[in-house]
Amino acid sequence: MSKSSVSSNHQKQFDKEPQNILNNPLLNKDTWFLEKDLNVESLTHDVRRAFSFYSLSQDWLKLSTKLYVLTKIKVFTVCTIKTRLNAITAFSVFLKSKSIDSYNDINNQVFEEFGYYLKSKKFSQHTISTYYQGIVSLFDTCYLEGWLDINTYWFKGKRRHSQINDEINYIPEEVWNQINSNLDVLPLQIQRMVLLLRTTGLRIGELLNLPLDCLRKRGEQWRLRLKETEKYQIADELPINVIELVTIIQEQQDYIKQLFGENYRNLFCSNSSNRARKNQAGDFDKAIPKIMSAEKFNKWLNFLAQEADIRSKDGTIWHFSSHQFRRTVATVMTNAGIRDLIIQKYLRHRSPDMLQSYTHILKKTLSHEYEELIKEKKYVDITGKVVENYKPTNPVIELIRRRIYQITTQYGECHRPTLKQPCPTVNACWRCKEWRVNSDDLPYLKEDLKRVESELKIAENLGMVRQQQGLELDRDILNNCIRGLSEKND
Image 1 (cartoon, rainbow, N blue to C red):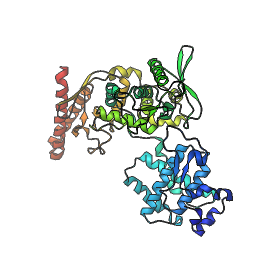
Image 2: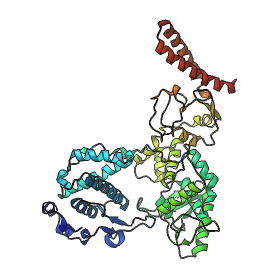
Image 3: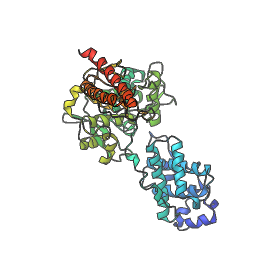
Image 4: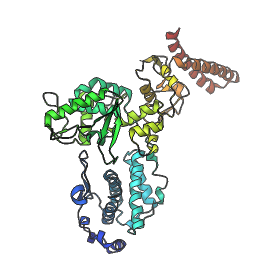
């Protein structure tokens, strides 16, 4: 689209902008290549190496967005701008569906309908908040630069939910164990990448861009040297606390040198195939001296899920993303009681606010609780039937497992996965088939049984038939649970 195609009234808005930016030839193009057009370094692990404006249907929005990108390209990272473009594109699609062509028609009602539109697409609250941030950033910039005057007050207070993401973004214990058992499904290089990722919590860009000479030894301490990336724009070193990682890295260094000699200076390489697959020797199919894309690495992770039939507790194939490993490391450290400042330094978060994504899972963990966490327990349901015998192998992972369920009960455990619909019993746990109790709950069960029997006698004496029926059901359920647990403990 050429800027000359914008309506004359709209053009007057942009005439306030210095003429040099309006004369930028990029405004006549709908695809901007990062390096060629914008002189911005394109990270080799990121396959998205251009900005596209093709999907913006409204001329005024397309021009506004292009000017916005030109203004912000030296301020924001490429990743941030691409995220903002996704939000603006979604807004453009929404406007087209409502036949809204003029920016003069945009008001609070339009924004309200846009919110409903995003929810209808089943986007998470985190994604919706991120989209709100993108729209606000665009229109606030337009107002400050004098291009457009669109009031964004409607978004106030609605774009902060993204600071804490309540979705399960870490890897639960049952999936973690399946990874351990089936890691050999992957080529050796991918195995080493997974071991590094799950032990150190590296960002995917940091992992893929590791230099070949990434190992450093400071006295007796081995360290991992990280290359500068877009996310964290300084070089850094990370202490290696698991000494086996040193051997794994050294093996990978030898592997790269055997493949490419001294001509390739990165620790990990890619392969020419677009699909995740191994050759007959069980290794990479056509390895090439090139940094792997984040997209291809995620394909390898999900190749593992498919080949090894890795499933979550609800029986569905687990869908991996590289960032799940980082979140798992952060969550384990938080639940182990490690101070926030140490976690922030280890994970190289710029702000302690980033830890909110993990600390909301468990605010505080006391070390003396660990012995209780690793005891073998049997769980019974409301019929008294033993539904599970379980002995945790890792107390920290056990803490994570208990937070996978969405309801916290006074005692016992709700085994209703968060992926299901909201709780239908509204905390009437005694009558829910997914409520579980173990021997630790026996004192509370017996205490509640005495209380229910006392209330039942009062209901009988007063002739309260409906209350009597409910209390009788509660009594029977409590007796079932006590009997099922007592059979093992007597």
